[in-house]
Amino acid sequence: QQQVKQSPQSLIVQKGGISIINCAYENTAFDYFPWYQQFPGKGPALLIAIRPDVSEKKEGRFTISFNKSAKQFSLHIMDSQPGDSATYFCAASRFNDYKLSFGAGTTVTVRA
Amino acid sequence: DSGVTQTPKHLITATGQRVTLRCSPRSGDLSVYWYQQSLDQGLQFLIQYYNGEERAKGNILERFSAQQFPDLHSELNLSSLELGDSALYFCASSVDGWSTDTQYFGPGTRLTVL
Image 1 (cartoon, chains in turn red, brown):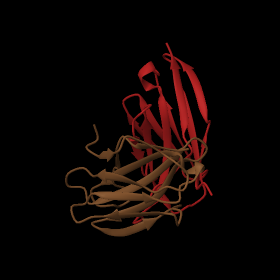
Image 2: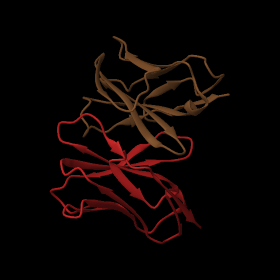
Image 3: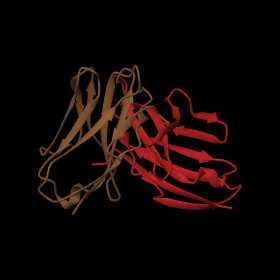
C-alpha cells in the first residue's frame, strides 16, 4: 500500500500564483522527507528536503512546511513560473533505512 | 545531466519476451536503485544494490531480476513480459545507499510491450 499519500493529483495555477501540494504519512518512524521534481521526458531530481526537527525549510521560491503531530508535510511554490511546470513527488524514509517511499505525484501546470 | 546513463532509451518488444535494461551510475556512487514509473502506479521502487550486493527490495516481480557488476553498472532483466509491464524504468544512483542520500536519476528507458 502507499505509505505516503499525496494530493492533489494535478493542479493548474496562474503565473505568479502559489502552488500547494500536500502529503500525509502514517509511519511515525519516518524522519526524512524529500521532494523530487520531474520534468517531462526526464528523471526526477531532488528539489528540497526536510527533517522533522524543523517545521519549515525554504530554498528560493520553494518551501516545505512540516507538521509532525498531523503527520503531514507540504510543498509551497511561491510566485509560480511556467518553468515550474513539472510533476512533483514527495517521499519519506526512516533513519538508517535504505529506500524512499514515494507519493503518487502531482502534476503542476503554470499558465502564463 | 545527472551523470547517470541508461540504455536503451526506448525498447519495443512482444509479450513473453525477455529484455535487459542497463544503467551506469555516477562516478563515485556505489549504490544503484531501479524504479518503475507507470501512469496508474506512480514511481515504484523495485530494488537497490550497494557495491555489488542486493540491499533492499521493493515491489519487484519474480519475473524481474537485477544485478550490479564489479564495475558498478547494473542491469535489470525483465522476462515473460506482459502488457502491464509497459512503463518507464528509471535507474538512480547515490553515494552510500542510505535513504537520506540524494538519488540521481537517469533519463529512463521506455519499455513498450505489444
